[in-house]
Length: 197
Image (cartoon, rainbow, N blue to C red):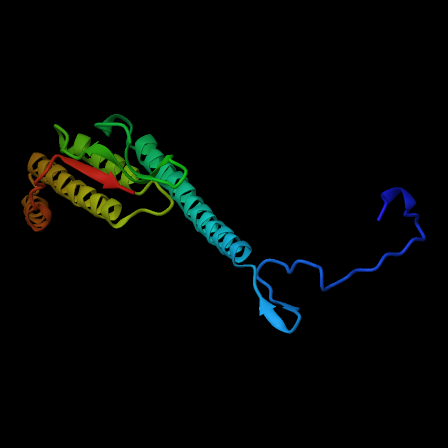
């Protein structure tokens, strides 16, 4: 058929017996079924690679979201810890299918040692609590650090009350402060606790 002869009103016929079947389909030719297996295999491989790339894309999306969340979490700890931070944020990474490393965990070191006076210890305990609970979604480890800081604050307050009671001669207040101090004075085994995302 000459392309120059075809006009807008021209029609042409299609001979289905001479047409090549589509990949992955079966055609009837003279009463027997034939299948183009090489085209079919190529289509199957293409579908597999597309499925893998869709799975990879889904994984990358999750890794990117986790990376953002972990970095925000650790930066919140770092910003609230101020001078008590013993290190910057450090991260644990996982490599994605694109070859990029994504943060999936992290920590910020915070000095949890008591201050030189009960007043200083109270201030430090409050800052430790604020740093531990700074992220929008504190982890179990974050809550444990905040709890230890709250206990440290209670002990410092009882020490302060005991000092005030001794200074004023109020033995009853002093005895009560000593009881409270004994109840809450579990020794802190480490002066450095890592806060994890």
